Image (cartoon, rainbow, N blue to C red):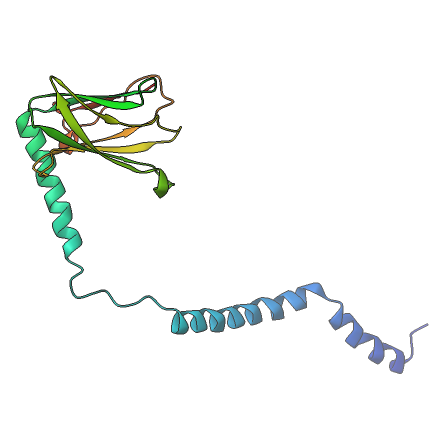
Length: 181
């Protein structure tokens, strides 16, 4: 009733080749070794370049931004932005200072071509410049005097019902409200 010895010896190698667990035990570590050599090749041929010797300038720019936002807080600035779709103009009302012009930067979160940099001229209590309506996105808005002594920032969503507010250095005393259509 037992199979001959020659028959069982030939069937044993076929059982090893058909065992999926054995292939996992062999293939997974082999795949990790091959992938590590691939990662090494990418790191050696396409590695990051060295930092420039003057990379510290970015920290200085951040310090200037913090100082400009603190200056807006100290001046007690408050601004309201309205984008008038009918006249295609950006209108800003500023309380707490009255420079002859304002610099308004509207930055789209994903489309650099949609960014706008406007110089708003003062006319009475209102600052204005030609400006088309904003597309539905979370725009970054920055309002500053032309010399860059102070600045206000806000994140604006034109599709939101309520205006967005933000202040210099997060202070509630210097909000920048955005009223959009």
